[in-house]
Length: 174
Image (cartoon, rainbow, N blue to C red; front, side, top):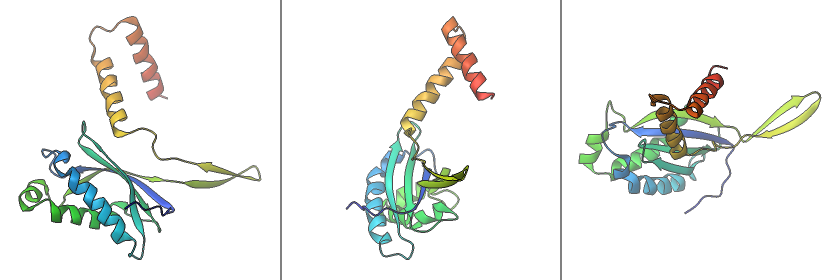
């Protein structure tokens, strides 16, 4: 079931399992099922919410989620309680006990609020700016970071690599 409901508040949340030794791929099917149940259940809640996008990065073992909400969420990750509960109920006692650390199933890696429409007054005119969801996937970021690390760890860089390093450092130090 796919929800087409457009909600005004969006949050980009990146999660890892609490026990990083467990691969997130072990619960991939549970995640898909939980998203479907979460979205159905949320239609009945006072503050409607939905998970509109999810992606697993197998290189970094992270789950990225776009959570939409009818009302602002002061602590967005709390909006995922039911989602987490559904997964915990379905993974089985043994796997759940392996994953849970310090009473948590997931650990928050990052949370960003995504602004759909932002109104700004500039020189007596109103300008509407649209800020979109992050344009890079976790896989693209991971691959770029790996290339960047390799570039800086190269002990015998050629002239082109030295120039790249200098440009990168110049950008980072601005």
